[in-house]
Image 1 (spheres, one colour):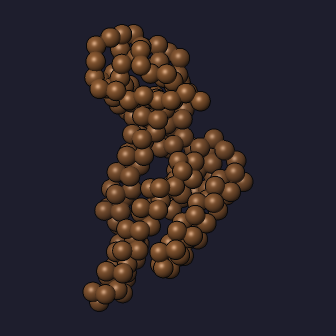
Image 2: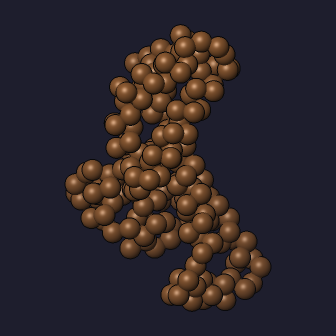
Length: 189
């Protein structure tokens, strides 16, 4: 496996290099990002951002594995997109979710309970951010975006059984990390 080199902006054959990269790997990148984000439109935007980022940051002659660099940059941009969507979703609560949030707010009226809950939420967020991408994406789709197992499996291009295995591994890793921190595991379906 080759090393990936990030370098400072420089002159060179970047436009030709980016064009070749798009021709050779564009379709695979779009498919990868669509599975990861669950949205072909978001995948297209993220792919364009990745190409632009590589154009600005790389010297083609110093990159030993261009496909890996492209997919690495795109995956990081997709994770940023998913985090932003998760934040937006948590801010825009409506209907039953709003009522449930009010109940939680009532339960957390005492400052010590509120502080403990906020710390547990921050810890869980850090743990989820540290999950490998193949576990993090299904976890976020299921427990943050509330997607059905069938929809997630279709979006990721895997079987429901493979999805269940990934969710089980993600939950086990989260549970283990939380317990080492002395925090209780929240009930997820």
